[in-house]
Amino acid sequence: MDIVYASNDFYARHLAVSMISLFDRNQQAEEITVYVLSVGITEESRQKLQKIADQYHRNLELLDLTDIRDRFDYEIDTRGFDISAMSRLFIGTLLPRTVKRVLYLDCDTVVVQSIGKLWNLDLKGHVAGAVMEPTIYQVVKQGIGLEEQDPYFNSGVLLIDLERWRADGAEKRLLDFYGSKNGSLFACDQDTINGALKGEILPMTPRYNFFTNYRYFSYEELCKHGPSYRQVEKRQFCLAKKYPVIIHYMGDERPWIAGNLNHYRRAYEKYLAMTPWKGAKKQGGKRLYMLLYHGMDYLTVVCPALRWEISRRLGIKVVDARKQGGKAAKAAGTTAGTVAGTVAGTTAGTTAGTAAGTAAGTVAETTAGTATGTATGTVAGTAAGTTAGTVEHVGEKQS
View (cartoon, one colour):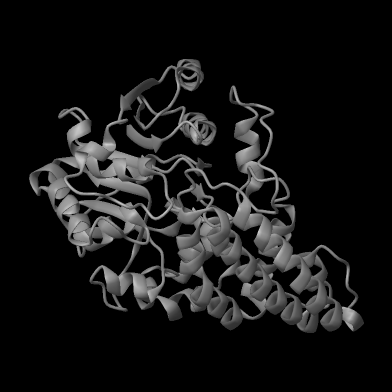
């Protein structure tokens, strides 16, 4: 198996977690070679990663991409995402010609079952296989030439027929497409792949790339917002929730953030404890925001319409504010926190009583749920939004 990651030094710890989970769950594989497209990974981190590979008798190669900006013939704006995310576009020329097929994994993934079946999946003539992401904003799809009924894929797990990728000139097509969008898209690499390779990607079961925030969405809701998602059987979606093969920590509820309540966090914590980064301190400053975000998880269950409305109104604004930092990010974070906190508190207080307390960090009885939820949701939301907006964002790609 030939596996590819892309990382900067900030994400090296998460890369280590994903890599050791890959090795641990696929010990029966005859050979595994991991290629890391490195944008600034330090020698210290490289040695730690090599230690993991040696422990499992696997091959590890770091390919230096500090010159990645020079590989573009135009100026690029990754909209706050780390530029290392763009390195996957160059897989065809970076990897040896002897490599015919690769599995690309984002660093914020954890492998919890064998990927043998995934590796041997028949791509049926497609250049790649990926998992659909129906919650993407329609305005994003329109901006890259996709219709409402067209599938949109997450680029965090990509099974690539590298022979066809090269033969079809995929790299040039990707770069030309990104350039035609002035080197700036909402989800830089992901939008580029979806736009340039429209109709050439095979939909895969969500078990191969299960987004942790999808635990709270119903199958029907996802199909309503992304009609093409009906290509996925409901049974497969339900299986993915319970028995994922690859967990992808999408959204803000990351397991390395202090105070997170991610349902799947223990998988990350288990493998972190097996790496040289064991005992690493979690990212702080977001405890209130984590409580609010978890409240939004439950809002997705009890009142999905409000959850969609909040996302529609604020999602892109918050992402754009991330690249600006400072006052812009703080303002966007405060606005998002206030609105989301108020809505989450009110809804949860009315429908579940204590849910508002969970979201806002208080304990509200059913009888006092509405009043307490609204008030505390607003206050905590504002505080959380401010905190989230001012905390530095480094290389956090949501792929």
